[in-house]
Length: 367
Ligand SMILES: Cc1cc2nc3c(=O)[nH]c(=O)nc-3n(C[C@H](O)[C@H](O)[C@H](O)COP(=O)(O)O)c2cc1C
Image 1: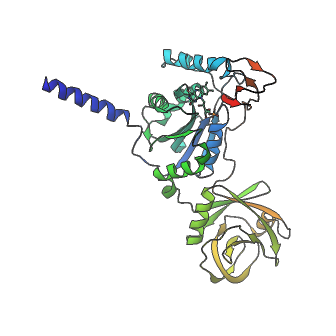
Image 2: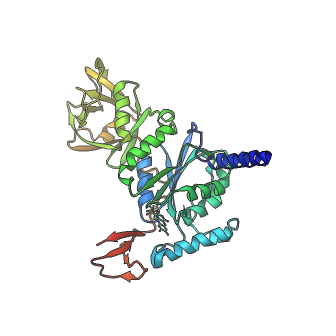
Image 3: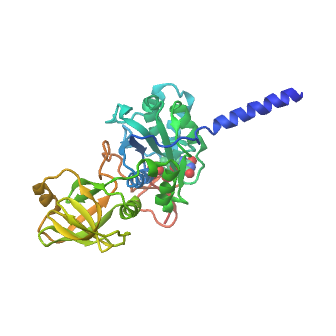
């Protein structure tokens, strides 16, 4: 009897430790990262945008083939139907709803993949399941992490779906759960989560990007306290400043915040990005000697290209500083428009909703 008990306890422990494997150990691997997301009502899209404002990554949106479906209509009947079909026969490709072709079909360039998915009826949204059914096998041996967006449900069912669909992944860290109750803090939740995956160390940013009039150029950052503080600031999101030409050699203006200066007398050269007086940024298309703190240098532009890019001689030049090269979206063509229609709780479309609780974009709203 004692022996049986010991065996049963051992089996139970084995089963439970297996269950927590996805809440795992590994961190980011050096190399390219892909963020892949599906979003019906816009929450996962927003999460992906916040995420990619904090890390360098390509991003790919998954879209259903049929963009007319109202998954929430009739008490979520269509969403339920899609999930039930998968559950009934998870190894049959025909059980999964069709999705648009994806533009990245070969994942071999990516070391890290972050999946951002909504939760549907405590499972992974059916559209994302289709993508992972098709491409999960290519994620074998890659470092994979996941963020799940839900209204309030716990995400263990989504974790189980991910394990089934991407069985050979090396899972990074805990799966991040973003619910309506903590959605307002999504940016800092993501920032802290990325730290647990060591993204901050691996992607110890030695680069930032400047965007002027839709053109983006990279800046190789100097290694000092000012750039560390600047990167930290930009992890919270891009910063846009308004700069003016001055002296025939620079565009400059207030950053709107201070950085720790370590001023030295230097002769700034074309392409140099400089901190002046602790809280001003100067970007040079000519040369000047002053007591400055070096922030970095614009990568690979000739003098003429620099003057054009920086709008030399002009005023009120809007310059955006960011850690990502802006629109890295490779397949981010919006398909499903956010739905402005209202439904009653039993799924009837309501043309002029007033006074009551309705479903809009898959969520309950009180009017
Ligand atoms: C078909 C369907 C089923 C859903 N089921 C649940 C659920 O069981 N529990 C929950 O908390 N939220 C549920 N939701 C709400 C979504 O998980 C939540 O609003 C999520 O943030 C939506 O992400 P998205 O805007 O990226 O599509 C459901 C939404 C849909 C459309």
